[in-house]
Length: 133
Image 1 (cartoon, rainbow, N blue to C red):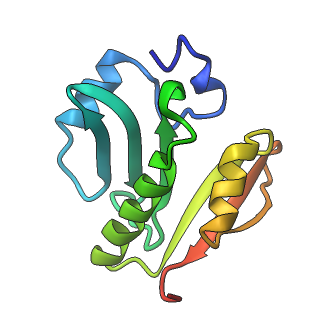
Image 2 (cartoon, rainbow, N blue to C red):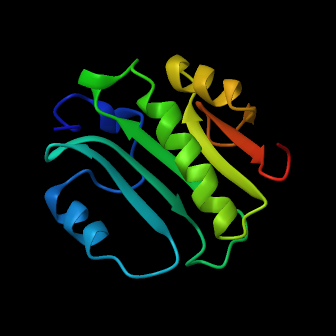
């Protein structure tokens, strides 16, 4: 569904396919993958990755279904992922966002992320210090 809506143009941490979804659903490891659902409908998807590769600072990624964007679900999922990262001992979180994704950039800045140009334009890299309340 997300691929059909063009979301994979700006959100592509892995293929957005049934096969990849099954792999994440059966995943066992240190990284965290979450699905935000209502009545068997996926509304959002969030992840914290990098612990399996040995990084102390996980990379965060989220996507909210286009039909429910603008309802606060992105903020809810982000705040949940921040708590999950803190509980796992992370002191910082990293993310990458397409520079044309203005809605996400606004959300990330409002949550305290410091965004800077990435070496792989047209992206920005955000960093959030989880030790600051």
